[in-house]
Length: 231
Image (cartoon, rainbow, N blue to C red; front, side, top):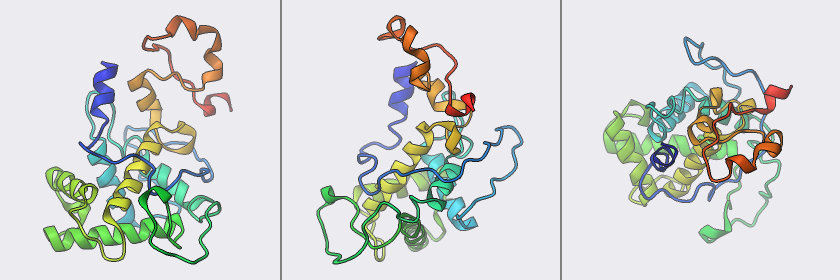
């Protein structure tokens, strides 16, 4: 079942390598994750309602609720990325953003003067503009098939955004989903350790040093341990 679950989490056929557009950074201030059942809406630190709706729709398309895990939104991915964008990473603390700004090669990574926060704001605005032009409504208002088709168009290079590379934005969006889904729950994503339970990851590795040999090559059937379990 673990192999089947991992295969399912390829999300979209032909998706690019995660992290090509943006590198992960230090999380913003941690807060307690909400419970899945009847939880209140997240109080976002930096995302607007439109941006949160866009990310929720994208993450739920990447990670729909099924027998393997809750949806991306219910796993806390929007809250996770909101905290990332609200903190030092989102403000570009570790990026050199002074000029000159020239068109670089894809393998050279992020080459824009925008902070990651500004980049996501611009990317979501451009993606919604493309969606309205192509489908008559914002991305989050599309049905599941429409969202899937839009993401594939961005990833495949068929879509043209005003002022931004659609494929690069898709890769950044995809990377943010991956980071949030597999992060330590302390940072807001991976609520209830859903992804760790799915793949059999035990969590904080140092706590399993004495039992590592007995699980070599096997699925780990242990309750995962998060950093917050030791706080």
